[in-house]
Image: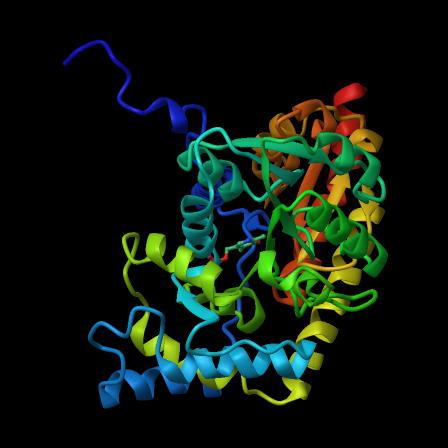
Length: 395
Ligand SMILES: *Cc1c(COP(=O)(O)O)cnc(C)c1O
């Protein structure tokens, strides 16, 4: 072999995702994993049974249609009308993907030219950086700063230049729990129209908003023809292993994204597509209870973290809480998270890895609350030892 590095330059530095690293640490130490955001109880029994039925009856066991099964595309279209009064033609404006992850990848690969700039909120969900890099484009961070994590719209305006092609939004935002307000969405939409930018919006936490409501930016004037909206069944129905996601957009945008998607997975999750079609038609009580349950869990974990000495940034959405460890006498989130399982049997994730500018998130640690209440109670009781063990170290 030549001395040339095997990993290409585009992916250099992307290494192993922090979720894999911290989940492996949780397994190795037996610690409670509040790092990776996956629920510890499965979604509705009726939906699980629908998947079993599809498998048994031979629905989706062979390659489903490229854009997704018609039943699911119709259910996605109806969901967008029911919750947001948005109308998408299931035949031309909806595409089923292997989770939101593939939707993000296919969208970036389809819409970006090498050298294009993509403005995204940092801290960012880690696949954004990788997908922008694989497309040969350049990410330009708009830093969300504690304690409110609200985007600075003057800063956004200043970042836009002739190379800017796309704004990559995420609301509710992982990891900070920030939810864009109507005013912010309107201002962002106005900038997109003024500068003729594409907008890609990751809305996988659309049903987990605790303060205010989720409003898709696609509904705003001038946005329909430039917006790609992405969501997924994983978070909303607590089946993250099924990897059923979707894109809704105008026909020409869907056609572009589909072109990339068909050479990534082509299709996936045949029988699960039938089950998710049923899930999307669950009554409002399902969605209301799902949100209420998670609000209670948010409050339980938030109270426990405050009592343990963390500074807690109250999330308006998602199933994550971002904290600051400075009050515990700690500075470095990454070192803190690596030591945490050993110190008290809990795993969390350092937000610093989600920043291009790690200083901005140096002392931030993210915990998930999509776990059973007894698990959250046990985790927070373990975390109460932190302040005293810090005092012991100092003594
Ligand atoms: C979990 C998550 C995804 C991935 O969704 P999948 O459907 O599991 O691929 C995408 N974006 C954000 C912000 C997430 O938190």
